[in-house]
Length: 180
Image 1 (cartoon, rainbow, N blue to C red):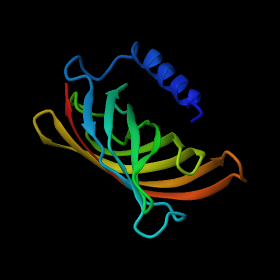
Image 2 (cartoon, rainbow, N blue to C red; image 1 turned 90 degrees about the vertical axis):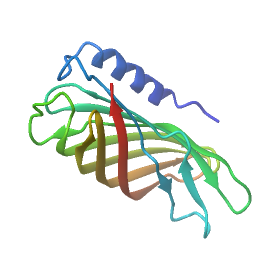
Image 3 (cartoon, rainbow, N blue to C red; image 1 turned 30 degrees about the horizontal axis):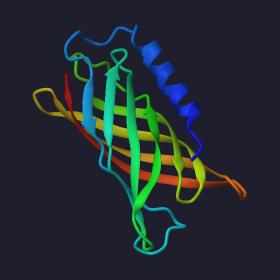
Image 4 (cartoon, rainbow, N blue to C red; image 1 turned 60 degrees about the vertical axis):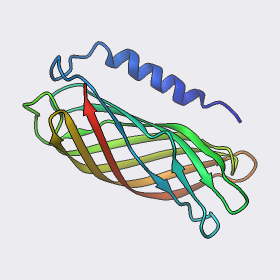
């Protein structure tokens, strides 16, 4: 399996540059959450799908209206011929909130450009996803938020041994997390 070097470089760059930015408040300063997800591609056989078995989310406010969100992707491919790890990668989003947050916890309507880099080892291709997510993030308890969004965009399927292909992307994104 070829390494996802661009995603590692992207992650290190984000961490390096975001560590010096002033967050909305000293406490809480980041959210740790989960993003359960299921993927079904048009080329999968009937009854086949992927489920993210390591759906961790890290979200850090960068300004009063801009957050950085990183989501891990480690999908278990449920296949008719047997189950195994199918995808591994990272999704990066920059939720831009329509209104400045007065509280240290990011809430409200947002629009997030998203970049996703994954490797599908079962179908032998890299994926580059580019989409936009309108959504709403709200507080459901003290220091706990729920984010709901709709993802729309496109994915490049970069196959190892065949012609590359573009596909449309549609997803429902639900994240629940706790601020620390």
